[in-house]
Image 1 (cartoon, rainbow, N blue to C red):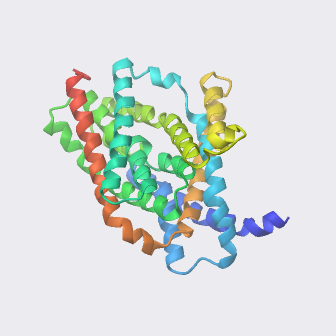
Image 2: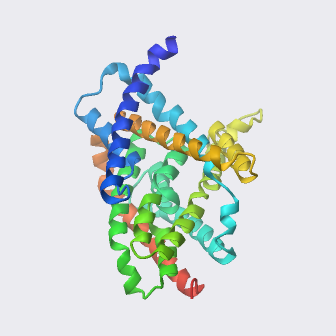
Image 3: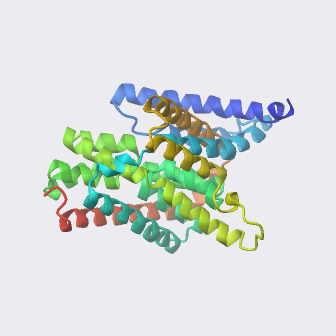
Length: 337
C-alpha cells in the first residue's frame, strides 16, 4: 500500500499525459493515414510543456521518476517479443551485410561526430543510435544502459525526431535525382529514415515495392537494437564495475536486456506465437509512451535549449553520413540493379 501511495499518483499522472499523446497520434493517422510525429515524441513534448508551465504537482514527482526508469526498462523488455530472427533472412545476404555494416559504422562515426560538436559522451551515443537504428526505441533502449540523464534523452529524441520529419519530406527528391528504381529507393528510405511510421510514409508515397522494401530494411535495422544495447551494456559494466569481485550476470547485462533476449528467442523459435507477440508489442509501445511522458515531466527545458544547436548539427551530420554511405553502397554493390 505504501508503494501505491508513493508512486501511484505520479504513474497515473504520466499515464494521463501519455493517453493524450496517443490520442493525438491516432488523430494524425485518421487525418493523414500515418503518424508523422510519433506518440512517443508527442508524449515527451507534452511532459516537458507541463513541467515548464509549472503544472506538475509535487505529489506526481516520485511516480514520474519511477515511470521514466523502471517502466521504460520493462517496456524495452517486452519489445523482445516483436523480434524474429527469421525476418533477417528475407533481406538476402548481400543486403543484410550492407545494413548491419552501415549501422555499425554510423553508430561509431556519429558518436565521434557528436563529440566533435561538443556533445557529452552519452548524448553523442543517443544521437548515434537514434539515427543509425530506429530512433526513439533505440534511444529509449540504450539510455538506461549508459546512464543517460533526462535532459540528454529529451534532447536526442526531440531534435532527432524533428529533423527526421524533414528527411521524410525531402527524401523522395533522391528518387529522381539519383535515377533510382523503386527497389533501390526503398532500400535508401529504409536505411535513412528515422522511425517506422516515417519509413512507411516515405516508401509508400513512391510505390508499393518501395514501401515494402523500405519496411523490410527498416525492420532489419530495428533488429540491431539487441546487439547494440548488449555491446553498450558490456562497455558500461567494464568502465564502471571493473573492480567487482563476484561475477553476476546482471552486473554486465541489465535485467531488462536479459528479458529482451529471452523473449526474442521464444519468438524466433515459435514458442511465443504471433497471436501473443502482437498484443505484447502493443503493450510495450503504450508503456513506452507513458515512460516518455514521465521523462518529459522531469526535464528542465532550459537545459535542453542549451544543447539544442550542437545536437541539431550532430543529427544533421549523422544523417548525412547515413544517407551518403547508403547511396554509395547501393551503387557499388549494385543493389536492385
